[in-house]
Length: 440
Image (cartoon, rainbow, N blue to C red; front, side, top):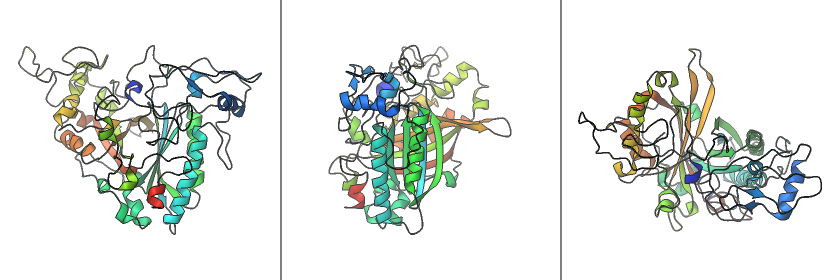
């Protein structure tokens, strides 16, 4: 969790489009419209979209249809939002934050190798394309989401370090998948870390997200078993009076300094270029996944002014303690009447700034989580931290090392699970994710 954590829809590029082959676009935060009339089936509603096309407004928020069959009511703006599966970069990386999320890791079963993995990725890719288009799964669909539209569903697939040994592809394993170093705040549960395969699911409707979760799990069949699974959430689109950066469970505005698509080096920081190494990772990215427990009972004992000093930003609006608005540049040299820095030297926002870390930056796109109340009454809650970068050794690692040396926030958080995954580029029509690796 850092000052660059992705919680702001406006700072994220999106692959939501009016057709599966459309390129990524950058949407403004969305608002839900009025609810659709009951009694209309999902296929009727989506048949309207298929016949006429989904129309994106100038801000990417107004969704409508040119016509509708008699007796059918178009979906709300929230339900009809659709992300494309067949895109240059896999969906779920630069898309706006979604309200509901599921993260899963799978291990290949004994006897499953490269052939079985290829068949599995083909099944998963077909299912993802169908569900993201608002269609049912090809086989044994559960009907959980039959009344809903795509609801911005994205499904993303990645490979862990161990996958390459299990499939005999160790020579194709990227150097960027070398194990992450140990950090002092780590209290890692190995059973909930790593994995051969990783799947990220996000949607703006909980039933749509769960429908995808079940479909992916069922598609695994006998080829792979679930190693771990985690559930997350974010603020729902339209929940605030005006579009704004989301807050984390500490109540802090979280996501101000994420890299933006307008940045000249945005693609360079996030994605492996065509012609890069290994070749099968062209247009792909690397995801660092961390389950970060927030020690909320301790945090909430601090008065707001002390919380602000820990972070380096005002709690009310996310502006730096040195003044201005949320997007105002932080003045790291500004001192108060007592001669001390206004933004403390160990403030989280100071330590994580790219210009304080040799330019190291990554796109953070997290989910909050809450897994109940512990026997001592403390909430088991925090952040499912997900960050994207072209090279984790130049993105996540140097920033986390610096945080390890003196971040004021470290006493209020605990890293409990970790994973690093290679996420290849998007699949072209007729292909499946990872095909260039598994059939190359």
